[in-house]
Length: 131
Length: 484
Image (cartoon, rainbow over all chains, first blue to last red; front, top):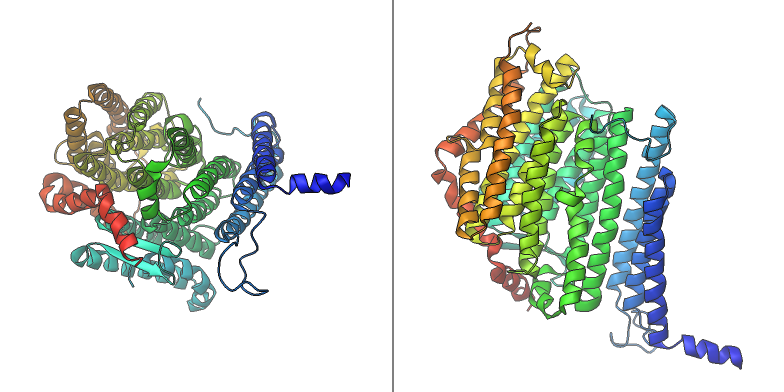
């Protein structure tokens, strides 16, 4: 009984909404904190990825409505009413792919750089600079 | 069906490369240059005929993707195609002596950069802008790390890190826009953006400013730029300075004009531009690395363009476009000649110029620097004059003063470079240039002089371009009109 009522409570729109909002913002600032404090290059890439994922969650969570269904016709649905908006999902899929590609590229640069110089600390990556 | 070619053909070129490789080792290089020449002719043809055109791709707006070609975007497309064609012609001369490693990849990336820069300019959908933003970014990261030396890789890493942060912030801004306004189409958004509460406008504005600010190299966010310019090959720097930055600048102000005409944040942007210019020119004074000097000079000019465009009047936009043209052409000339100098002398210090023995490159340097300074009879003069005029007519005398002072500072280090060019010393061996390279330098110099001495030939075109840029009502009607 207890658990069912707990589920019912969490299944309310505004509860999910506020959970997603606060959760994704906390995640965003965890990423931002990591970006500012970590000095290992791979950890910095990971921090930025966490920031990006927080944005994805925030976007999807804000558009999503529990009472609505997936935007597919069939199973008694014959018109596009009471359905979730598919555009953000398509956008976020694109953004995830792009983010992953950039992340992989960055890590490959970092590996090449490590092979040549043996450095992974961002503070040491300073061949150039004001002289 | 014409504006889509500018994006589709360079992107498809990548897929055609395996086929083109079969035509010998020159196949890819010549095909790429021929395609760029064809696209340049197409752009010229459009400039002679068209006014406003919407290109809808498969689904009508606001859901589908559409490209809008108007005077302003046409100006940028024409400029990018011209500079890219000249770049390719120069490279055709360079590759006989010192080709890039793995040339086919290089051409694919080059055309990706071109396609995405033009896509940024033409796109009328904010998510598409994000996608092109990323494609331009990825190709630019790889190009800057292309040589795989520690310096180049460091440049690539720095560019990529700032780019990743920028794209996270930009995506956040886009997400907020979609959540609150339910659309991604610039025209629809331009009608509904003012309904947002002020705080939300401020937040979205800040997120977009951080997102684009990294890429348009504006004052608090431009710490990475000079390192990237120094680490990358000078040949690539010419693209960054004259094509990529200009595409981001256009799209930033395009969005600003559409979303917030007469925005309350414009004074801050104006000041950011002016401070950006002043800081860059002062730091440039003590630089001894040639690439770094011109990177700072690029930052300064971009700051000036940023300041002028944030005035939001038609005259100011025309001035901004004149400076965009003059700066792009001059920086292309300077970085291409730097490529020749650095590849021949294997040194990047300013004192290398004392041993330079090439009248053609000396003349190119001097003319480009005079144009950047804004000396009469060169293209830069018209732009700077119009810019100062629009600062004065909108009563921004503080900014006017900063710009004049920064130009003075700028002249000091240009004179230092000129002094090294003409200084007494042992001249090295004569620097050999291929005929196509000589032709490119002559065309670039001719463009600077022709626009400077006969600005009335071009001012009509730029007048239309600037009118189209500030005419946001027509832009909105064109898309929402095509909707019904």
